[in-house]
Amino acid sequence: MAIEIRNALRTHPEVKLSKLLAALELARRADASGTVKMSYRYLAWRLKCHKRTAQRLIKFLVEEACILRKLVTRLAKGRYDWNTYTFLLKFRRNSAHPFNSDRRDKLPFTPLKPGNSALLSLRDEIAQLEKGLRRFPPTPGSEREQACQAELVRLKALLEKGERESSGVPEPAPGDDTP
Image (cartoon, rainbow, N blue to C red):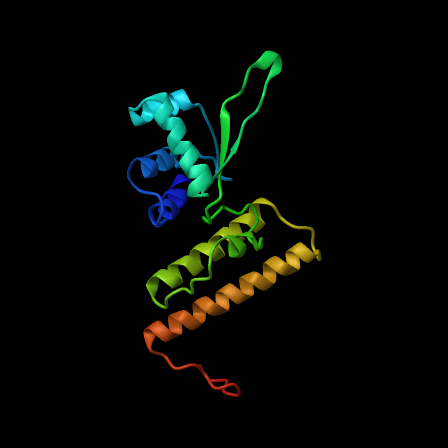
Protein backbone atom coordinates (compact mmCIF):
# COMPACT_ATOMS: atom_id res chain seq x y z
CA MET A 1 0.00 0.00 0.00
CA ALA A 2 2.87 2.34 0.71
CA ILE A 3 3.93 2.35 -2.94
CA GLU A 4 0.70 3.98 -4.12
CA ILE A 5 0.88 6.66 -1.44
CA ARG A 6 4.56 7.31 -2.18
CA ASN A 7 3.85 7.77 -5.89
CA ALA A 8 1.08 10.25 -5.09
CA LEU A 9 3.37 12.15 -2.70
CA ARG A 10 6.21 12.48 -5.20
CA THR A 11 3.94 14.29 -7.64
CA HIS A 12 2.52 16.69 -5.03
CA PRO A 13 3.78 20.22 -5.80
CA GLU A 14 3.98 21.60 -2.23
CA VAL A 15 5.86 18.76 -0.54
CA LYS A 16 9.64 19.02 -0.92
CA LEU A 17 12.84 18.01 0.88
CA SER A 18 12.49 17.18 4.58
CA LYS A 19 8.69 17.45 4.41
CA LEU A 20 8.69 14.87 1.64
CA LEU A 21 10.93 12.58 3.70
CA ALA A 22 8.55 12.84 6.66
CA ALA A 23 5.55 12.11 4.46
CA LEU A 24 7.34 9.17 2.84
CA GLU A 25 8.22 7.73 6.25
CA LEU A 26 4.57 7.96 7.29
CA ALA A 27 3.51 6.39 3.98
CA ARG A 28 5.94 3.54 4.56
CA ARG A 29 4.13 2.64 7.79
CA ALA A 30 0.57 3.23 6.47
CA ASP A 31 -1.98 0.43 6.27
CA ALA A 32 -4.29 -0.31 3.32
CA SER A 33 -6.66 2.54 4.17
CA GLY A 34 -3.86 5.12 4.36
CA THR A 35 -3.84 5.35 8.16
CA VAL A 36 -0.72 5.27 10.33
CA LYS A 37 -0.08 5.59 14.09
CA MET A 38 3.27 7.05 15.00
CA SER A 39 4.78 9.09 17.80
CA TYR A 40 6.77 12.27 17.23
CA ARG A 41 9.75 10.71 18.98
CA TYR A 42 9.80 7.69 16.64
CA LEU A 43 9.37 9.87 13.56
CA ALA A 44 12.21 12.12 14.72
CA TRP A 45 14.42 9.08 15.29
CA ARG A 46 13.64 7.76 11.78
CA LEU A 47 14.35 11.17 10.21
CA LYS A 48 17.46 11.73 12.37
CA CYS A 49 16.19 15.07 13.62
CA HIS A 50 14.86 16.63 16.82
CA LYS A 51 11.35 15.87 18.11
CA ARG A 52 10.32 19.52 17.67
CA THR A 53 11.39 19.40 14.01
CA ALA A 54 9.18 16.35 13.50
CA GLN A 55 6.28 18.27 15.05
CA ARG A 56 6.85 21.18 12.65
CA LEU A 57 6.98 18.84 9.66
CA ILE A 58 3.70 17.18 10.64
CA LYS A 59 2.11 20.57 11.25
CA PHE A 60 3.06 21.63 7.72
CA LEU A 61 1.70 18.40 6.19
CA VAL A 62 -1.59 18.76 8.09
CA GLU A 63 -2.27 22.49 7.83
CA GLU A 64 -0.52 23.85 4.75
CA ALA A 65 -0.06 20.94 2.34
CA CYS A 66 -3.41 19.38 3.40
CA ILE A 67 -2.28 15.83 2.69
CA LEU A 68 -2.73 14.47 6.23
CA ARG A 69 -5.46 14.47 8.85
CA LYS A 70 -4.27 14.22 12.45
CA LEU A 71 -6.25 12.59 15.24
CA VAL A 72 -5.10 12.85 18.86
CA THR A 73 -6.56 10.24 21.24
CA ARG A 74 -6.65 11.00 24.95
CA LEU A 75 -6.35 8.11 27.37
CA ALA A 76 -7.17 8.01 31.08
CA LYS A 77 -5.41 10.20 33.64
CA GLY A 78 -4.19 12.87 31.24
CA ARG A 79 -2.17 10.49 29.02
CA TYR A 80 -2.31 10.42 25.24
CA ASP A 81 -2.07 7.66 22.68
CA TRP A 82 0.14 7.88 19.60
CA ASN A 83 -1.09 10.31 16.99
CA THR A 84 -3.13 8.79 14.17
CA TYR A 85 -2.57 10.22 10.70
CA THR A 86 -4.76 9.58 7.66
CA PHE A 87 -3.59 10.41 4.14
CA LEU A 88 -6.01 12.66 2.24
CA LEU A 89 -4.29 12.14 -1.12
CA LYS A 90 -6.00 10.22 -3.88
CA PHE A 91 -4.29 6.86 -4.25
CA ARG A 92 -5.31 3.42 -5.45
CA ARG A 93 -6.90 1.43 -2.64
CA ASN A 94 -7.17 -2.32 -2.94
CA SER A 95 -10.73 -3.56 -3.27
CA ALA A 96 -11.96 -6.67 -1.49
CA HIS A 97 -14.57 -7.32 -4.16
CA PRO A 98 -13.94 -7.42 -7.92
CA PHE A 99 -17.14 -5.50 -8.73
CA ASN A 100 -16.63 -2.72 -6.22
CA SER A 101 -16.65 0.69 -7.86
CA ASP A 102 -14.46 2.07 -5.06
CA ARG A 103 -11.41 2.18 -7.33
CA ARG A 104 -13.03 4.37 -9.95
CA ASP A 105 -13.92 6.99 -7.34
CA LYS A 106 -10.39 7.25 -5.96
CA LEU A 107 -8.39 7.66 -9.18
CA PRO A 108 -8.97 9.43 -12.47
CA PHE A 109 -9.80 7.15 -15.39
CA THR A 110 -6.80 6.06 -17.42
CA PRO A 111 -7.66 3.82 -20.38
CA LEU A 112 -5.59 0.71 -21.02
CA LYS A 113 -3.23 0.87 -23.95
CA PRO A 114 -3.82 -1.86 -26.54
CA GLY A 115 -0.99 -4.33 -26.60
CA ASN A 116 0.50 -7.19 -24.65
CA SER A 117 0.25 -5.50 -21.24
CA ALA A 118 -3.50 -4.96 -21.65
CA LEU A 119 -4.00 -8.57 -22.72
CA LEU A 120 -1.91 -9.78 -19.80
CA SER A 121 -3.98 -7.77 -17.35
CA LEU A 122 -7.19 -9.16 -18.89
CA ARG A 123 -5.83 -12.68 -18.45
CA ASP A 124 -4.97 -11.86 -14.85
CA GLU A 125 -8.46 -10.49 -14.18
CA ILE A 126 -10.06 -13.59 -15.72
CA ALA A 127 -7.81 -15.88 -13.66
CA GLN A 128 -8.57 -13.98 -10.44
CA LEU A 129 -12.32 -14.03 -11.08
CA GLU A 130 -12.29 -17.76 -11.85
CA LYS A 131 -10.18 -18.43 -8.76
CA GLY A 132 -12.64 -16.47 -6.63
CA LEU A 133 -15.54 -18.46 -8.06
CA ARG A 134 -13.75 -21.73 -7.27
CA ARG A 135 -12.80 -20.73 -3.72
CA PHE A 136 -16.10 -19.05 -2.81
CA PRO A 137 -18.78 -20.56 -5.04
CA PRO A 138 -21.92 -18.41 -5.22
CA THR A 139 -25.42 -19.74 -4.76
CA PRO A 140 -26.72 -21.07 -8.12
CA GLY A 141 -29.03 -18.55 -9.76
CA SER A 142 -28.09 -15.70 -7.41
CA GLU A 143 -27.39 -12.14 -8.55
CA ARG A 144 -23.74 -12.57 -7.60
CA GLU A 145 -23.37 -15.64 -9.81
CA GLN A 146 -25.05 -13.91 -12.74
CA ALA A 147 -22.85 -10.84 -12.32
CA CYS A 148 -19.68 -12.98 -12.15
CA GLN A 149 -20.65 -14.97 -15.23
CA ALA A 150 -21.52 -11.78 -17.15
CA GLU A 151 -18.16 -10.25 -16.18
CA LEU A 152 -16.32 -13.42 -17.28
CA VAL A 153 -18.07 -13.38 -20.66
CA ARG A 154 -17.23 -9.67 -21.10
CA LEU A 155 -13.56 -10.13 -20.18
CA LYS A 156 -13.16 -13.20 -22.43
CA ALA A 157 -14.73 -11.30 -25.35
CA LEU A 158 -12.32 -8.39 -24.78
CA LEU A 159 -9.39 -10.80 -24.62
CA GLU A 160 -10.44 -12.57 -27.81
CA LYS A 161 -10.90 -9.23 -29.60
CA GLY A 162 -7.47 -8.05 -28.45
CA GLU A 163 -5.80 -11.26 -29.58
CA ARG A 164 -7.45 -10.96 -33.00
CA GLU A 165 -6.26 -7.35 -33.35
CA SER A 166 -2.70 -8.17 -32.32
CA SER A 167 -2.47 -11.13 -34.71
CA GLY A 168 -3.87 -9.15 -37.66
CA VAL A 169 -6.88 -11.44 -38.27
CA PRO A 170 -9.93 -9.43 -39.39
CA GLU A 171 -13.12 -9.64 -37.36
CA PRO A 172 -15.81 -11.90 -38.85
CA ALA A 173 -18.86 -10.25 -40.41
CA PRO A 174 -22.05 -10.40 -38.29
CA GLY A 175 -23.78 -12.93 -40.59
CA ASP A 176 -20.62 -14.90 -41.53
CA ASP A 177 -20.43 -18.43 -40.06
CA THR A 178 -16.99 -19.32 -41.42
CA PRO A 179 -14.02 -18.83 -39.09
